[in-house]
Image 1 (cartoon, rainbow, N blue to C red):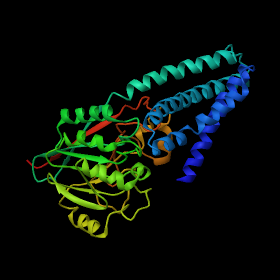
Image 2 (image 1 turned 120 degrees about the horizontal axis):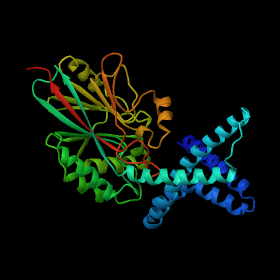
Image 3 (image 1 turned 180 degrees about the horizontal axis):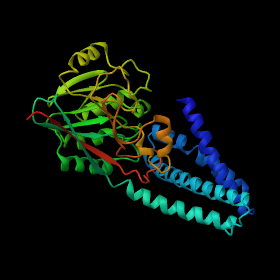
Image 4 (image 1 turned 60 degrees about the horizontal axis):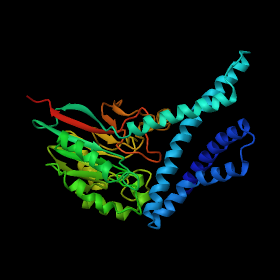
Length: 366
């Protein structure tokens, strides 16, 4: 965790250095000390916000989070755009092509484009899409069962009651038999998350709600996260399995959590191995990492947010080797990677709209 924070701060600080260095070079009379102080404060703002949240300074943390993380989104976008401009300028110079766009115009154009993308991203983050997939199998005795997958809500200081109500409203519309949550539902530490419990309790699917733990449940505090999920009506599967609606549901903790329950328990693995020929098994696992030794027919995952902000989708594909949506694996098993419904960090999404997945599992038998 400490190494991740160190790398994140180094990258974020470098972005500030690059962007503010541009400002100072284009406008050399800009107050250098003010730019340095702003860069330092903004770079460490996530840690400052985390501290305020932990101290129970809800109002200050809320204002700081919206300001700090919105700025983070703007900086990410500005950085990507200005780097493209600089690469085009460098290529033009290499080819001895005259570039008519001055440094001042490049800076202004990048700022305006980043601002426009930020505004669009704020709107897109509120538009929850319902993605539907259908799976047919001879392993279901008869009829069909529907599952709604929610993932990566990141409930906390920014993703609160109004956001959760939009999620629950969509669940009411699609009326699934089962709701499954594939991690990072909780992301708050100082907030009164228990006040959000009633939202989930008002949407009780007929065949139950099941959840697994993601990495942010550990960051927020595992005990409080588990208490919230269970009070909200979820059965938390930690290396365990249950049967519901004619299918088997199994769940594991996030593989990066380093807990004893991060893998299937020996008795669960044995149970699934003996049932695989006759039962359709849905594995709930936060990160889209496939374990060839774990029995399942369909794995439901999240975690990568579809990159959340374009062009980071290419980074997540490089790291995990998967894309969002449905993938048929080489051995015939299925993997579905949900884009998530919430946001982490910047409260925006760019070309990766939030998602709830409606999965219909139907019997092939007539």
